[in-house]
Amino acid sequence: MSGIAVVDQPDADRVVVWHVSVGDGLESTMAGAWVLPADDEWIEQLLIGRLLVTTDAAAGRFGVGADARALAAAVQGEVDALDRAFTAHLATLPSSRRQLVRPRWPRVPGEATPTTAGDPVASGALTLARWLSDLLVAWGKVEGLRLARPFLEAHGGAAARTYPPGWPGSVETTGAAA
Image (cartoon, rainbow, N blue to C red):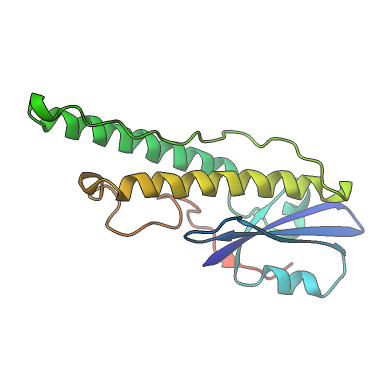
């Protein structure tokens, strides 16, 4: 299992970190949240070894990080590619076997839904973390549907992929705060 750290700095005095876990069979990907003073030494520890996704407010201090919109596009792109692969496979079958049922691909949320946290200062990070969580849950379902059909294994391999191809791209898993 690996993880993502969503980071927001809603004001000069505080930093919000929200962990999103990534892994097979997780019931919940939301793993923990912290609201800390901006100079707290624990911030760096919360980021180490995790893929960073930052809000615009935190990007100046922590870097841009991986792009949630790119994740949404990558998941939707894989759904589209897999659906085309399914259609192509169906066309190769004799007419007597063309009753294969098309997979019910999950809905891929293209935008974050604003969410209010118990502590309003954490709402920006929560909104982004929930969107990432929803995208990763959808991705897990896509991979499950892909792997349940041997003819789709050629599109991505025989093992479940943690992230869709191209995401997070060249962004490193770091965690060192600037």
